[in-house]
Length: 203
Length: 203
Image 1 (cartoon, chains in turn green, cyan):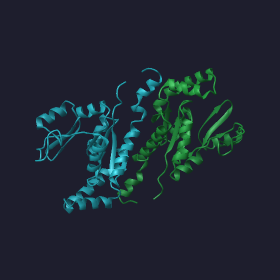
Image 2 (cartoon, each protein chain N blue to C red):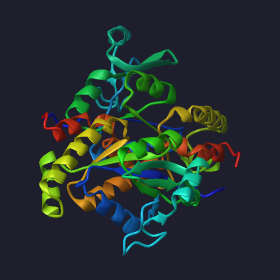
Image 3 (cartoon, each protein chain N blue to C red):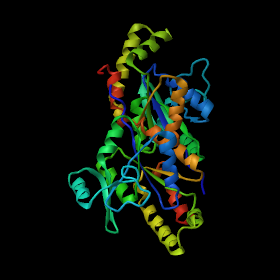
Image 4 (tube, each protein chain N blue to C red):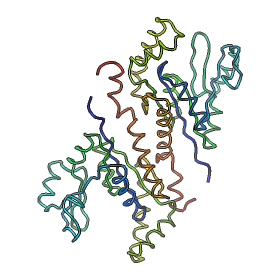
């Protein structure tokens, strides 16, 4: 029998929801494979090709897109960003859970072509808390913070199309919550067609 | 804010899948509320009204059914069996998870009128193992065992309509698996409409 396929988890959430930290722990502590995006933007000093991003020329990127090699893509400020399909599918095939940290529009794109993807929306306990987290970062000015809060509220409108919502009160618990969701998902009947066959002696 | 509603879990599985044991532990160790069936059959010596069943006359039962007070019902060998709606809804309302151990046809009936019910199918690791468990019970003759295996195979045809499948290799793990499923379900967006409102400051 083949190894059971992994689950593709897409994590989104407003800036300040702590999704970066949660995703980091899932990769480090739970051995999830992290999908790496392709982008046409220039690498920053510390960024390494194949680690932070796959850095591609515009031509290379558009060729990937036009040959159906991206799960989703988007353009921001003149740069393209996208999720290469190959790596994700390879990891799922060998039974690894794959994690994708992308924004809501991209997540909904992936869900359309990959309905078994699990969409998880991470939120801070309250809007106030979100404001605090953004302010405490100290890296952004007030205008940026307000814009992000507006953006967060916009994204919340789309949350209905997500499968799960995880309230990130404590990081460790949020990590466990995602793990719980993925363990439950792996028991879904649609992911276990093989079991019926075993039971009937067909395998 | 109201207490978060509990989840209604329906557990089915072939005779010999160990569902009685799993359900017993969920009630004892995980504090799930167990739905008690109503029936028109006579109580056995050791059976207590309101504990093992709600024992009702045929007239009382049919009145419950005709007034929409049953989540599902069926007739076996001239006796009626059904699940009273009131108790289930009361428990869910106060935030308790409720467990219903019923057969496949009944489970699908409940899912139709209560789409948020979670259908879990419990199976032994292999068909052979199912045979062993039935034989080791020592309480049934060979013909009964064969009939039950046939019945199990029939039920398996309907498993596609279930949400989750739990392989009961070790009872403790199966109990944890059900617990994992219900914890994940409680994070489903459809069960958390309130969170959006909190986030938007509407509550």
